[in-house]
Length: 205
Image 1 (tube, rainbow, N blue to C red):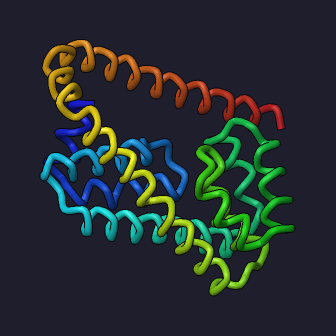
Image 2 (image 1 turned 180 degrees about the vertical axis):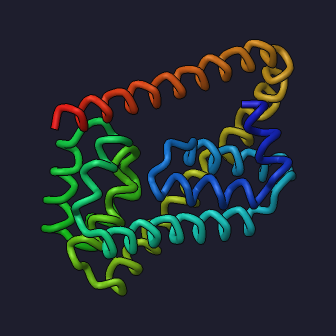
Image 3 (image 1 turned 180 degrees about the horizontal axis):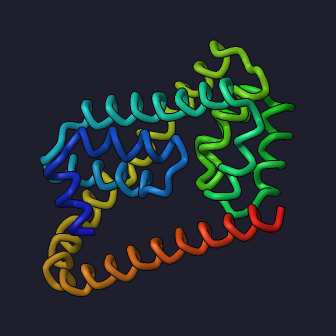
């Protein structure tokens, strides 16, 4: 956690905005971790709670709005390939399509709290022709609840276990760096596998 903590501590609100926007667009970035870590840094006095919440909500709404307009522009033609690339499970997209089609704005609100399928709600809402006003209302409502919950979780960790966390940072600092490197290599390997699978599917089509 120390490297991420240094990253957020150095870049502050810019880091929160960029990572949360990218996470809501659908890129595999640690969105929940960044928000929780921001809450922890609020407890440490490094960040201001009001700004963290404001930036978090705005970035979550912006990210989902980008997805909505991409869905509105390109329809459902590009979404299956995109979902297969990110999720690896096309059936999840089918489930979300039915959910958004039947529940509308309620599905957009609920999807905010479901990791792994959150990013599909915006593009699907746009592709299925949901009114932007209805989408935006559900999007904002979800962000207003979701962001404080994640930030509050990080703050609660600091409040309850902050002293132990700070000690642990120094004890396992080197081990953590090794774990992060291994995790990064794992992500790169996953991306490589997805690329190879995509090439095979295209050649076999």
